[in-house]
Length: 82
Length: 337
Image 1 (spheres, rainbow over the protein chains, first blue to last red):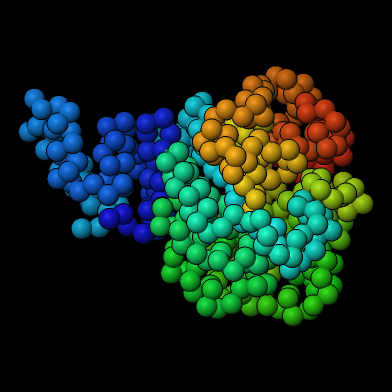
Image 2: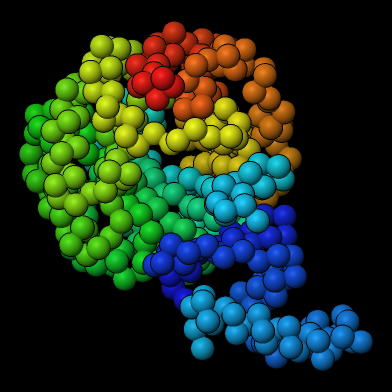
């Protein structure tokens, strides 16, 4: 779930996230924006991994690690709650 | 990635005709009657306004489009009974949400609700700290409105809400600007959160209300405090390029001052209006070089080209009026030195 202090917007495949409590901006590239959009629309982390694994079956292990790492960073920066 | 993320995304939005910011005027109802109001005459009932469900649908579409900011206005937005619900729905969708209000209709309970939902910024129109001038600028007679608004601003600041003071500068209140600014600064409003709005013609005549250039110049030091530093992007304001406004009846405009809509969301999906309306395409075709007088002006890095003011005041979208230029040069002239 997104922290309630988080606001965001997207332009041409990139996303700008602002923590309104700290004033810190974060940006997501195209791949990050893709994951972010799925998460925002209610997909679980497991479902997101499955979605990309279905698209790129030869990269399933790397996808697993990348998605975990992405969400770890979001949690570390208090963008999402547990 | 440039250091200023916000500017990077604003510029990227401009390059991609992406919608970065929207103003939604939730109602045309208002408890005040400002002589300079750009909305013109107010309605006293909610007939024809977008319903809460329609507002939610619109918010979902804006979220899908990647919009960052939503500013809510009116009329007086708190004249609408379900306004807090609209704000909650906007915050649930993680927009950066601000609103402009005269604060006269607020209560402690409503302010508590604004704090709970983490509203990002509240601009309060408060044109003068002098009671008689305040009443004149709002076109009202009830002194209680002044005291109520003040009480509500104080409570907002106590709740650590981000509060700005918006002052429309007229010949009535221009002399009160130092006192009004000092009063609210002492209360806790930050210097950057004062907005001094020079008059622009909307649906009411404003020529008799415009302060003289001497009056503006006399208060120049305060009026330029909230001016943005030199910028690199276009001289033309963002209306119709990365921002637009939507009125209470679903009409979509480049900005709230335009009197001709680009479309209506009851007839055409908002996304289609944004991408395909002729009015927006026309505005997006404008280049700074088409505005001959402005392109060579000494205050071009501080002033904004206002298409509506040009059309209202000279009839030529590319040409500002002398009154517009005189008042802006009085305000920004010292910045350019």
